[in-house]
Structure formats: C-alpha cells, structure tokens
Amino acid sequence: MYVRSLKLKNYRNYDKLHIHFDKGTTILYGDNAQGKTNVLESVYLAVTTKSHRGSKDKEIIQFGENEAHVRLKVVKHDVEHRIDMHLRGLKSKGIAVDGIPIKRSSELLGICNVVFFSPEDLSLIKDSPSDRRRFMNMELCQLDKIYCSDYVNYNNVLNQRNSLLKQIYFRPDLNDTLDIWDEQLIDHGRRLIKSRREFVEMMNDIMRDIHLRLSGGKENVRIDYVMNTTEEGFADELRAKRDKDLKYQTTQVGPHRDDLAFFINDIDVKSYGSQGQQRTTALSLKLSEIRLVREMMRENPILLLDDVMSELDSNRREYLLDSIKDIQTIVTCTGYDDFINRRMKIDNIYRVENGAIMAK
Image (tube, rainbow, N blue to C red):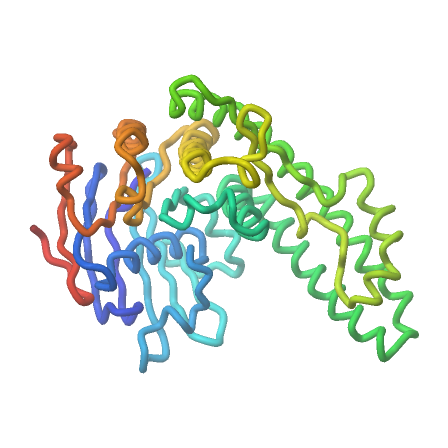
C-alpha cells in the first residue's frame, strides 16, 4: 500500500501542487510555516475525510478562494485507485473514487490505511479524553466499515436527542418522544462499546511487546478501556439518568464519554508517570497502530511523520526508524541530517518553501 502521487489546488498555502512519491521514504524539509505539514494533512484528509488538526473545510480552502481540490493516487494490492476530493466551504465536500461519486464518506474508508504521527501525539496520554476517543475512532473507522457506520449513526442520534432535550424545556409534551431516540442510541452504542473493547484487547497484546523493547525490558504497559457504561447496563443507566439529562439538556451516559487509561507496572501513567514515560507510552501506541493495521489488513499502512524526530531522544528515534524500514513513509523536518547519517534508503528529498516544492 502506498501513495503514488498528490495534486492540490487552492489548498491552504498551495495554489497548485503535483508531487510524486516512491514506495520508500520521502523527506520534505524546510523552515517552519512553509507548508510541509499541509502536504501530510492533505494525504490524511483524502484517505479519512478528516483533517488531523480537526480543521473545518472552509479553513483549509486558500484565503480568497471558494473551493479547493485534492487528488490522491494510491496503490493497494497492486491496484491503483484515484481519490478526488472537492472542498466547498460551508457545503459538504464532494468525493469520488476512481471517477465515481460516493454518497457517504464512510464508503471511502478502507481503500487506504494511513497512520499520522505528530509531536501532538506525544501528549496523547496526558491530553483530554476527547483526544483519546478521537484516536480510537479514527483507527477503528479505517479498519472497520461497520464500526464507522455505527459511529456516524450514533453521533447523529446523539445530536438529535440532545436537541430534543433542549426543546422539552419549552415543550414538556415532547418528553415521550425520547424513547424513540433512546432505542436507537442504545442499539448503536452497544455495538460501539463491543468494538472498542475488542480493539483495546488487540492493542494490548501488540503494545505490551513493543513497550517492553522500548524500555529495555523494564516496563510492562497496559491499556484500560474506561467505559462510561457497559453494553449490558447502557439501557438501564440511560433511563436512570433521564431526569439529569433533562435538567442539563445533554446526554450524560454513553460511549461518547469513554476514555482510555495507560498503566506502566500498574501505575497510572497520566497521573504519576514521568514525561519520558508518557512520551514512550505514546510512541508505543503509535507503533502498535502500525502493527495492528499490518496484521488486520495484511499490508503495511502509509506512515506520515510530521516533524516528530526532533521530539524524540536518540534511543526512541532509533527504535522508530528501525520499525518503519518496510513502510512507505513521508517525513517532514527542518533538516535531514539524522536520516542521512543513518544511511537510510531515501527515495526522494524535497525542499518546501512558501508553498512551493523543489526536488533536491
């Protein structure tokens, strides 16, 4: 699985861009704020329909323009696919695969698998629960179309239910209609909980081995799935919290409030781990993500490394580079000496300057 080429038009600071990639390592280097990350973001957007930054489409379109275009050519199992994405500001984006428009963005997921690793990911352990849910959701959506469908449906029902809770404040006669939304929320929510539980179990098996190697055999890591409610208890807890939901006009119970917790030698990493342990745990998590995709899809994912090498010490950097030798990797950095000094096989080196890319 690899990206063959990328075309951009009116995308952030790129008027036009056409760049080709080889199966191995491509380095994009240059000063900060020149557009290196924008290239990685566009690849991630074309594959997942989402910006890794959480940006809205209107924020991605170049200032002064009404629309932007992304065209990505990817090869999976020796078959080339073309993904075209049309960003239209306040309107929903248009997506076509191999020239055929798709109605739901979930139809795009699974064509290609990508792992994005940025300095922000090193703070994933200590950041908010929403960041850890986003990590879990994005990975599961790439691996499992059924999960993606349940996730989209769950959020739609959740938004409708929350809107109804606000309406009931002024229209108490609408109270009975909550039952309809509750049934759907429970149905989709139970499946999300089951899939997340299985995902965490698989990640634990993989991450334990990786982290043990990263820590020189000193640390045993564990992920706990911190469920807001269980599959069996969701219905009863939702009913029990209805008065509270009506009071606060929002849904208090459900997988939208789940979290992940990380432990090293049974000690909570977020609360008591050192900064080094938190960063090592985050690196173990991202490397486990790569291996999980490989095991489930029987093919390597595409790895996007956004200026993360400068954030790692030499040991972690060495382990990361040794782990990705057989994966197509697109790297951004301010300088590439670390890669050259390691005698890595580098297929392409591009200098990025003010929205222009030049081959070195």
